Length: 389
Ligand SMILES: *Cc1c(COP(=O)(O)O)cnc(C)c1O
Image (cartoon, rainbow, N blue to C red):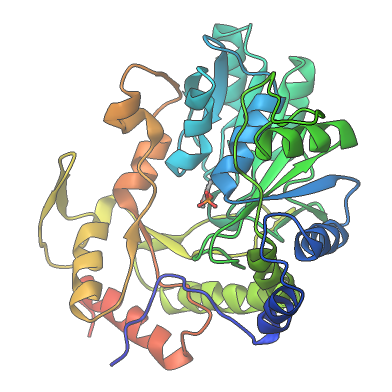
């Protein structure tokens, strides 16, 4: 049987038309009409008053946001703890020092209480980096209010949350800067790419300048600032234009997958990743957590795991292993940043809820090409892990 994947690219054919046009016009370069078109169409889709800038990756877009936010060596930056390392690494590119902020229970995203505590402990912090995990919007009212109160710049990492809405407004539009990713496993993809969303044209112009090697306006290669090669290619942007036409369809399929898991697991001691009533996730990944009392013994070192099967109980690593034996891909939840040895010297603020999600959580196959029958198999295997038949 074919492997069931966590999330793989779903192409529709229209992508080819844009790529073909790039070839026909021999416009195989960074910059170009597909980049412009992709940025304009994304702006229109998001419906916000912002300036979009397409980049080679989401990570480079975050780096540009961190630079635009003015992070300097030695500055403290308050960051989501439970996320992919790409959310927080660019802070280090600029010499900033991350302070990791715990998750809350309602959405698994940055806890407003812990953020407030972070500002009490680091009153000089001027930048917050917030990720919307697995496509679920964070508590944006609370977080934007705290940032406003402390006069801090908010960078919204919406890499996983393109198309997700909070009170009817799309993720990426709440912060001073928003970023998107079009990596291969995201809800739409360009094979690799990202986008920076900023509020002013000046910020976008500055991002473009840095992203094209910081060339000054002069007859030769004149540099007064450090530059980067971060601009998206015109070929790749064509894939994005074709994909963007299908975002709503992708969201709908992702939502149906989430709902089928929820229904399928209703008699099991597991929960699906939660979201708040006033938000509409894009359901990028469906994630389960095993209820505390139903966790069998699972021990993880930095590089490996062991568990002991107990009747009626299970754990993420056991479920992952049995799914894998059945040629089904699943993945642990992001390992919190404060638990990473690279960031061992960084401060962490919270009670350890992010660690709890890591211990008891598993990302399930959420590929929109998965059939109902495929998904029933996944559900059946998870049931068996808890001793069902
Ligand atoms: C994928 C991802 C990124 C990085 O995006 P790339 O395009 O892969 O560089 C950043 N943050 C989060 C939360 C992500 O999931």
